[in-house]
Amino acid sequence: MRKWLSLLKTLNIAPGVLALVYLVAMFVPAHAAQSPLVSAVPDVRLLFEVSNAASTADPEQVRGEAASLLVKLLPDDGRGGVWVYGDHVSRLVDHGRTDIFWKRLAIVHTRSLESQGDTVDLGAALAAAAWDADEDTRLQRHIIVVGSGRFSSGDTAADVSRRDQLLNTTASQFAAAGIHVHAVVLPGASDSGVLRPLAERTGGLYLKVRSITDLHKAFENLLNRTAAPPLLRVREGAFMVEPGLGEMTLWRSGDEPDLELIDPSGILHTRTLPGANVHWHDARGYDVVTIVEPEAGRWQFKGESSARVYAFGELALRVAEVPATLFPGYFNQVDFMLFAGAEAITDESFLGMTRADARLVGEAGSLPLFVERLPAGIFRIRLTDAISGGNWTLEVGLDGPTFSREVSIPFVLANPVEVSVLQDGKDLVAFAKFANASVDPRSLQATVQVRVDSGARQSFPGTPFPGGLWQIVVPDTVLQDSGSDVEIAFSFFGRYQNQSPFELHTEALKVVAPLAAEQTFRFDAKGRALEIKAATPGGVDPRASVPSSSVSGAESGAADAHNTPANELAVARSADVPQESELPIWFVAAASVLNLLVAVGLGWFLSRPRIPLELQAWIDENTPQPA
Image: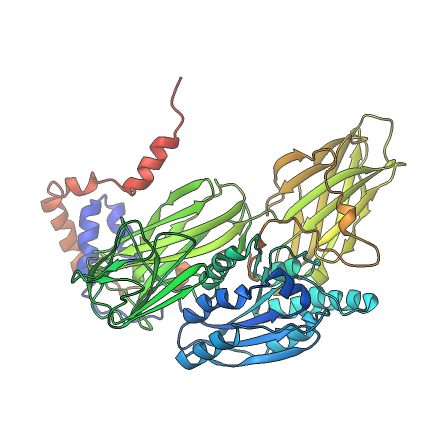
């Protein structure tokens, strides 16, 4: 098909006729092909720390209640299990299918978590929850650790050995098996430097909540990363429910006005008068409302109340896997498709009545993205590097005549290499933090190249510390007189998790020795310097978190996450797009004749805007105007 279309373009045939030819070609039988986007069934395993430290951080037992949101919205054909750990590991709910009976059992057993003492055996808990790490499975396995972040058995020497085992051996095994470890650190707790690098190296989310009320939002993010249920789009306080929708669940958190909902028949549903087939779960800090077989039509919220509406039915919007952490320089593209049950919808006549859109939402606002339509029902988003680091959400939506679907995917835009340079007496010391879950940390080596005052380059090996931190010391014998211009470049060598070679070389950063204050440099995934920031006097010395007798993770404090064992978005390759059957030569000749007849009539078609109005408006607002 593409060969004939290329021939028509070469003959200078109008695009309008190309579209006509393509529509006619739809009636030519073509071989069915499997969709490139087949979602894996989620397998979510919850680990709750029940030490005295966790009980102190969460005295009102909110963590189990907040997790009930995720439990309620897991798919019925998924898998799950619940464990608690302190000085020993106990299984609260057996691992099994997450049907309605499993969900009820999990919600009951997590309401009250009894304390087990002061010691924490995280390694044993992970081993219990990942007993099948060496087995092949079609399930997408996730382990969610909820606790204080402590790692203590009472034996300091044993703790160091166990940390090394977790961060090097266990993390690499999990990454190779596709097991993502997510961490939720309770408010007021101090992470021991294990959970963050463990999440980074296995492609999980690291979430350190500031208050108990933030636990609900943390579990909503985890829900979108693990199960990714589709949303009904709420616009101006209203949303559409298509005929045949099996169930919808409304969720809202915070101290917003009481939730009041009006169905298409005009009936008001409230907490005190929920109505038929409406199940209202009112908990501390959030509401969950489940409506079975909702009436088709326009639903609306009364007054200022609002909620997120999750849909459970035949129609589902599936998005290719987006890593939990993206790196500048590796932004590429992401595909999504509409499914009816297990089958992808590829009918172009139906999809032609839909409108697709996407945007990136961050703390400073939102950025619309261009969506390209491809054959076989594939929609492709072209991502952009023109955003700053931090927490972002990719929102993808598809609207039809009687339905709407949206998927919200949180991720972190981070820098894989961050370097802090400071003066230590007469020596110059650099601490380089490397974070990329697709690279096997056991294979990694780091070196630094130093040149003083345009002299010869000298190479020094880096000293590794757990958690992906490297220390490089430039001795005073290399540095010359005060005021020396020093260029420092870093090189990292190793293997990806699939054992292919990996290397990264940074641009040379420049400092003047001796340093008056610590300086921080950040590089993207291609080694390009992104920003230079001088630390304020009295800033934290990186050496303070790297004691010689223990292990550190070089924590940075903000909620973070790192990518799955692939540092680029999963995309549908052009080879995955099914090829259509070729057209006979008589059809091509007929199309050439049609071109002469309809070229004028299709002129309006060619003059239509090619990009969404929202994107054009954003471009106009952000285009610099001439002075």
